[in-house]
Length: 337
Ligand code: TXA
Ligand code: MG
Image 1: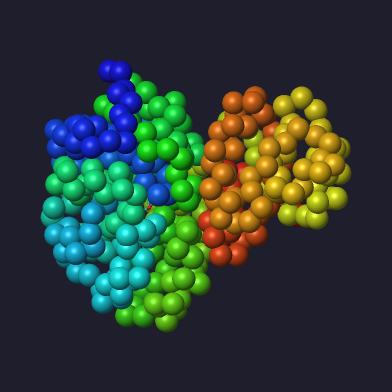
Image 2: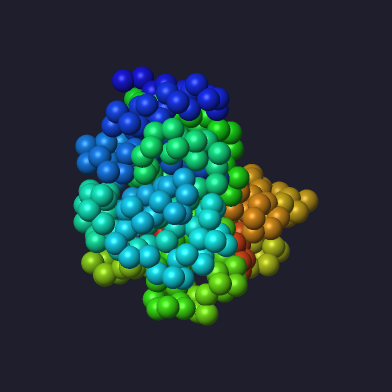
């Protein structure tokens, strides 16, 4: 099966919606990264997503709705705090985990009795949900373990022949996946995966925001985690990634003393003056770094990088999302000088 490349126009969006209604899987742009969408209530369609990605069956999918008011149709209880958060952050890059109802089959929820609900702001994803009339289950559109795709071209590289179609909606705006939260109490949430909706932003609505331990720490094999996705190897390019927390001078000497064929550096914009080794840059601030990170990891593979020394980003604000993805890409290998 050849994967169709669809355009961002109403006819193609209608066609994609029809494919989804018919139980097929379509690559769809969102404001975070591209997703692989299928009808969340159709077990066979959802099974096709898992097969296309090579995703472990116990890793649940996020369910995308065109409006938060539709969440009552797929959940069995919605905390008041979820309504307040939805008012402030939906549509946008926030996923809220709530008890599911019977319209979400166990394949979709990875066997859990909860479901992650997200209302994406991207007009193409919004239109596909509306036109299909389906709640759309969609993980990131990469093969399991690889960096999430931020363009239709990267979706095709991972998924050509594995899904019915991909809609080209240009480059993803945020570049990292949504913030995933669960509810701890009437007033408190727990961040399971950091994203563009930061802890500081959530504190505008919540009394307390807990950062889950697994965000910055390696999860021991067999350990129970709040979000199954945190226990798998993630975001990893083919190259060996090493994160380095140091001043620029020390970074330059470290790369210098390990330099050779296949060795690259991933540095900040502004570091490149006088940087004497092969490098790519990934932005000057946290938002830019979030936007570029996954694309740069894929580009480094294309360039034949075998070992990449990366200047560690700030872990503040949106930076926490960048740090969280990189430390997983690095398999928790961090050098501190
Ligand atoms: O921005 C995003 O969230 C993108 C776009 C396509 O919407 N989607 C995405 O999906 O990143 P995925 O499947 O690649 O990552 C979803 C993460 C996984 O780590 C999964 O374990 C967690 O969210 N998750 C989903 N449902 C959950 C649930 N019911 N309980 C705990 N964790 C859940
Ligand atoms: Mg993913």
